[in-house]
Image (cartoon, rainbow, N blue to C red):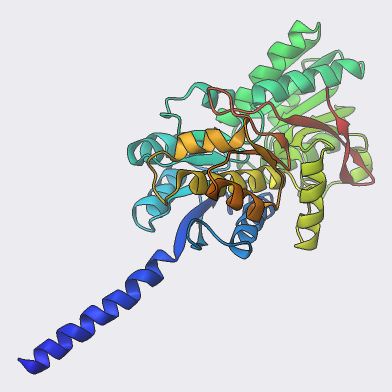
Length: 400
């Protein structure tokens, strides 16, 4: 009996030692397409969120000093994989909330099968399909880039402003491609432009010459590619330059990666036009640029700054909520993202933590500007004009 008592006492002591250790971390997820057609874009996006959480850990941690433990998941930019991955993170790994997913399809499936049933907040740094604005999400889904409805309008104005009055659109046959293609076509037509062709194509083919021939037959020499730099976009651009049927190439955010030019004579795409969400010249953007550069992150990498803002906002919401609980986290997120409150800039975790501890309010003004979420969880955002110069994408200016 004495031996049994000693064993029991030892077990209880061990449990008492283990319990506090388990309470010292809060698990947050980063769910991106680390494989698939956007795998080249994912690492700097993930690094943006990781930078925000590293600053939190270094400046006092969450709540009573808990450290953020980062759990990563790969969605491959695919709906089923996305749902399975987010389900594992939430229901097996115990992730409280997460940054991501990255694409439209994996985001939609994750909202429907994981976020809503488990009351889990998710902030996407890159899912831009207009349909996500009105998805039934119980106010659990937010995003830090602007919707493609806005990007389509900006791209249409940019093209018309450059005297490009007709276009042929090739879009990848998924929610992202169709959503942005439709938004561009509608805005461009409203401005007096002619959409000579607006055709879908399937991802993953080795030969798109038939599709390109159909687009060229429309009579337009201005080819808009709404697809992915490491997928059909790269193949279509290479084969289009070989055919010589097009004089001007145009791409949207999924094409803004220098991996696009692998195997392509870049002199043939010099002056290619593109758009991407970015950060305006504000104090928060300047701070993020300094902090990201010091951490070895390219601050201009597409969606890196949006991911940083998503990560910092999640941490602020948890601190405001006062516990590592899903209950109330969505409401707390809205409170810290906008006025009233003292302005908090990137990296100012210690300041924000002190204000919240004293019962004050904070208003996060981030790397990408104003993060005041509207009723749908969207932000206005900023779109930049991009151009290919010397074989690389160069940021020109804010596209109006």
